[in-house]
Structures are given as structure tokens and as C-alpha cells.
Image 1 (tube, rainbow, N blue to C red):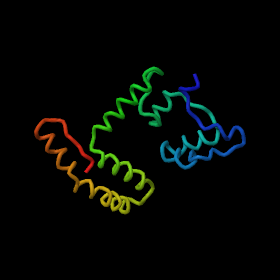
Image 2 (image 1 turned 180 degrees about the horizontal axis):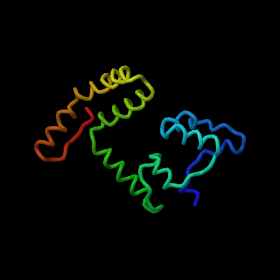
Image 3 (image 1 turned 180 degrees about the vertical axis):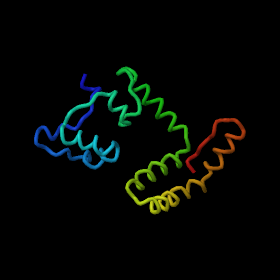
Image 4 (image 1 turned 60 degrees about the vertical axis):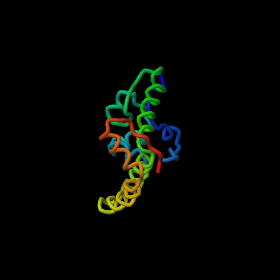
Length: 136
């Protein structure tokens, strides 16, 4: 069905795919593929989207929510300060020159390394127990 196909079809209606498609797709996909999607408006199936790295997994429709919840639970089990800082850093560093990106990463990572959670994580690992993160 249509749920397992991806595309940006605005161009077929003489419209511009506002909302970030022309900004994000050339970063998320190889440039030539992004331009083909944006300029033809053709749909691709889930297998092709997976092959291109546009989607992480292809699962049966009834497994979409359980699979998403499994991934969310794995993320939520990690140190919350680290998760938030990694997300912020990855977004902030996109497109920056490497030297500048390294400076931004260092700035965003420093508070994480100074946190109580950064002591708890390795300690729990060494003691072979589940960590108890507080977000501090």
C-alpha cells in the first residue's frame, strides 16, 4: 500500500515541498538521489528507502509501533543528559567545518562528563548492575 512508499510529490502539482524537504533530503540521502526524489516526485518502496539508509528498518505494519517502542526504550535506558547532548550536538554540527564542529561537540559534551550520571554509568558497568540515572 501507500504506507510503504516514500516520496515528495509536490513538484508533480507545481508546488514547492516547503517544510524542509529541500533542506533535509540532500543531507539524509546521496545528493543525486535526493534531487531525483525532489525533482521527479516519484515514490520509492520501503526496500529502496532502506537500501539508501533513509529508514533504519522495514517491518510488517503490525510491528511498526512495537519496534519503535523497543528502540525508544533502549534510548530511554541511557543517560538522559548524554542522550540530549548527543542529539543537540549532531544537529548543531551538521554542515559545519570539522574543526568548528569539534569545538561545538566539546562544548556540548563537557557538562555531560561533569554530571553525576557520568560517574554512575561506568560504576554500574564495573559493578555489573543496571545504572540508576538521575539526569544530574
